[in-house]
Length: 219
Image 1 (tube, rainbow, N blue to C red):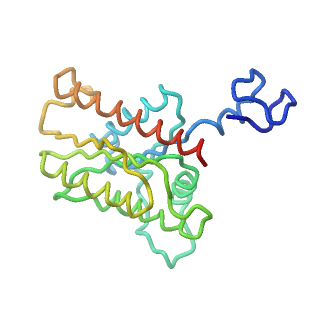
Image 2 (image 1 turned 135 degrees about the vertical axis):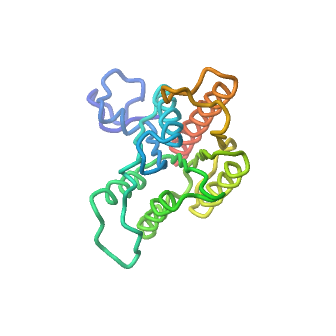
């Protein structure tokens, strides 16, 4: 991989050059956007997203999470041109994203209205040179009090990714909150179920980051 605009003066130089500026380095690092949860801060879905994105950062990626009040947006209206500051921040991040990780609670076996409304704002990218996300990895996390709702909604999230021209990762994480997954502290519990979820979220982070890196190299 070559780097343009390095301080060493060579054009282009190599990515391992010790003169590469922080700004240049950041543009070479995949940017992963996490989106989901509920309006209640620190919901189980938000905690799962945070764990996954923390694993992305440990592996060298950059992240931005939109959850809780970040998702308190007006109902998406494609005919309205004005956007709130929160909506503009979300759309800008999604426009720049090399990958997206979406997490939703399992309300009545379906994607929550809050998360679906936030995803509807991706329609604002319809006239961009890169229409919608178009080709990035799409990670999916689903939390529900019961296995049936968790798996059913996970399937919906993957379908939404396909519709937006994204690539759902091979692994999707369905979390059954009825099991002893979470400790009273809010962290993943040191139980068999908690360790399984931790391993799955870390693997999801690995897949998202690896596919995002491969997509950037081939672009």
